[in-house]
Length: 219
Image 1 (cartoon, rainbow, N blue to C red):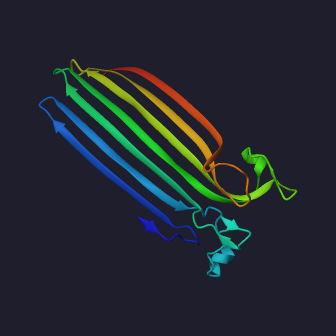
Image 2: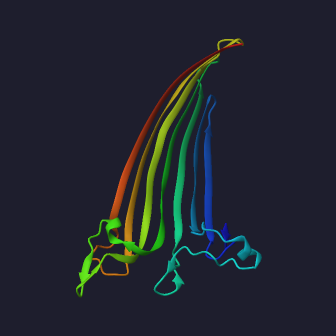
Image 3: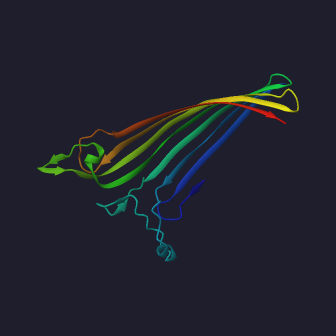
C-alpha cells in the first residue's frame, strides 16, 4: 500500500505477507505460521492548521526544515520491520486428554531518521571543537534512532475431560523480551571529529514472564 499523504511530505509505503502450512495426522495437527510487515512513513505529525487546509494549502509541515538552505530534508522518515513465526501443535492423547502447545518468535527492528537544527554537541556526548579560534558547540546534524528487539516464548495446556460434568485445564507460558535502543549521528554540518555512525546513546531492556494456571470446571 502506498500513499502520497494528506499533507506535504507525509508519504507512506506499507508491505505485509502471510504464509501458513499444516500437517494433519489422525490424532494431531502441526501448523507453521509466518507473517510480517514493513513500513516507511514520512514524519508529518505536526499537522496543518485548519485555516491553511481550508485555503487549499497543505504544505505547512515544518519537520526537517534545513535552515542554511531553506529546503527540507528528504529522508525524514520512519522505517520499521516486524516478522512473526509461530509453531502450533495439537494432539489428542486419549479420548479424555488432549494437549495444545505453541512456540513463537517475533523479530522487530528499524529506525527513524531526522534532521536537527542547531543541536548542542554536549547533548550528544560530543566535545565542542575549535576551528580558527572559534569554539563550535552547536551544529545541524542528522541522527538515526534505532529499535532492535526480540520476543519469544512457549505456551501449553493439557485438557482433561473425564465426563460431561468435569473439565480440567492445566497450562502455562514462558515469554521473554529483549530490546535494544541505540542512537547514531549520521552527519554533522560542522566538523566534529566523530566517526561515521557515531553512537551517542544506548540502553537495553529484558523482561521475563512465567505463568502457570490450573482451571477446573464443574458443570
